[in-house]
Each structure stands twice: as structure tokens, then as C-alpha cells.
Amino acid sequence: EIVLTQSPGTLSLSPGERATLSCRASQSVSSSYLAWYQQKPGQAPRLLIYGASTRATGIPDRFSGSGSGTDFTLTISRLEPEDFAVYYCQQYGSSPQTFGQGTKLEIK
Amino acid sequence: QVQLQESGPGLVKPSETLSLTCTVSGGSVSSSTYYWGWIRQPPGKGLEWIGTIYYSGSTYYNPSLKSRVTISVDTFKNLFSLNLSSVTAADTAVYYCARLPFRPYNWFDPWGQGTLVTVSS
Image (cartoon, rainbow over all chains, first blue to last red; front, side):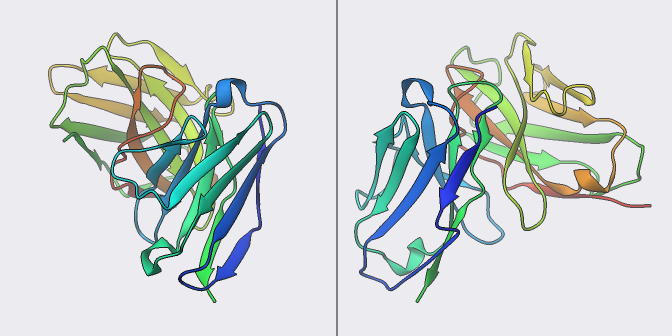
């Protein structure tokens, strides 16, 4: 099973700043089969990125994903107030598909 | 656009079977393009994939839960279901259903709103 480790656990930033979230895999993720989700309190996760770098439908271009192999990054170029939430990465290259433990992005 | 809605009991006794249904609207579970999955999230914790089903009935389960999980599909009612047997307090979680494109292991989009199931006597 591939273990995904997200860092930092909590990221405190102000609106307008740039956020960089990391997701590291215990083994190489085949074909960059990695997704990112945003989850707000009391809501279901929302798909942001799949294939490591492809934005899902309707996702603003301030969200971008990059990486390959074992190291992946989600970048939010300029934080909007609605971006403060928990972010999860997920690998679907091998079974069982697994999620990271999450990074909480909070307002500084 | 497609919407998913979970339903089922919010409280299950230990050792019993948890049963949930996911009703699909605005789309068909019989589509050859999509798979359908279940994911859970214990309160305050992360996400765990439970399993995935195709309209043909082919299933794919997380090995950690495989001995207790059954997922089925009803193409006539346009829904799929989850049964988890011999539950304990560790199975208390919000259970989500979601759609996967093209492959049984893929990203999840969209998700249902989720339903909280508490295991307690």
C-alpha cells in the first residue's frame, strides 16, 4: 500500500499570499495518478486536480498541481478567503487507492 | 449534472451490519464510462477508500475491509449499495458515495453529501 504524507499539517497564511502544499508518496505513483481535493467543514471533498496537474472542471486557475514519482505539490497562487480549508491528496495508481492525512490551510 | 445521495440508518449496533444506499440522479449507473465507489471519513480524521463497483457487478475492495464489505448495484433503481458487517465503534464515520471515470481506481467526482453512521449500543 502506498502511504501518502502531506506537509505541513497546518499552514497559516493571509489572503493574497501564495500557498504551497506537499504530498510525498512512500513509493512512486505510476503515471502521475494523483489527485487533490478541498474539503470545507461539513462538506464533501471537492475535486481540484487529477493526473497531478489537470484542473477539474470549474476550478479557478489560481490552483495548480505539479510533480511526479514520489513528490507532488499543490500551489494556490493568491489565496482567496474561500480557499481556507483542508486539502487532501489521493493516489490511484495502485490498489488500494489511498489518501494523505490532509493539510489544514488556515487564516493567519 | 449527475448528483449522488446517500441514505440509510444513522445508528447501528455493534456486531450488526451497516447498510447504505447511494441513489444516482441526472445520470445512469449503467453507463459504461463510469465506476461507482464508497469512501468513509471518521470524525476529525482522513479519508479511506472502501470499494468500487461497475454496472456489470464487478467489484474492487480495500483489502483492509474486504472480509466485511459487500457492494452491489441495482441498474433498474439506478443505485448502488454498501453493506459492512460486524461493525465496531471504529466503523463510526461519515460515509460518502462518489463516481469514478473510466477505471475502478481513479479520482472521485462528484461526491454525495455524505451520511454519518454511528456505531453504538
